[in-house]
Image (tube, rainbow, N blue to C red; front, top):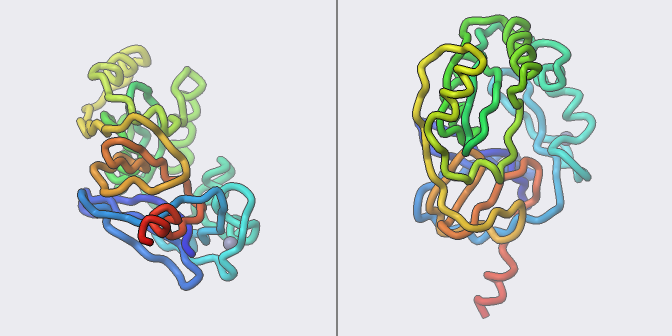
Length: 239
Ligand SMILES: [Zn+2]
């Protein structure tokens, strides 16, 4: 048994990480690769960030009802205070404030300056711009808060990211808020006519955009913590 963690990007290529009772596993999401998985509605704890860029598995691979961490792992996670807006992650780093257009919506976000491009790829951004760089975490969060209070979103739902992005939406939003920066084009149209959060894994893989996998017909949004099992449908057709 394993649980989904997330898709991260290594040298611009997507890699899917799983939590298992024995630790973590990763699999490259190459085009044409086939999977025999089914994503269930059950959830298990994915562990916690023990230090910068380092995750530690949940000692008991605990069953959970919602989210992706058990109480103890959430408490131990160095990013918990950061995520809830109650403090910095506790290590020195430069932070950037950015805007990302995913589909036809724009959001504001904060990330470590050295992770900026990976963060955009992880979010499935079509266009993105760095607005401010080399900030302390506090300065970056303050700017993000100001922009979100002035009407910029902080989240875009995955099902809105499968829409083909129109150009100029990000530029218009920047003009409206008197913001400057160079827009980076990462546009990637993901081909699908239905969006799922669980069920049969799209296979063979045609495209990956952020946390969404497509086989050209079906898109699956990766939700951290969901349990994956061998596909029962495939099992039956084997007889
Ligand atoms: Zn746990």
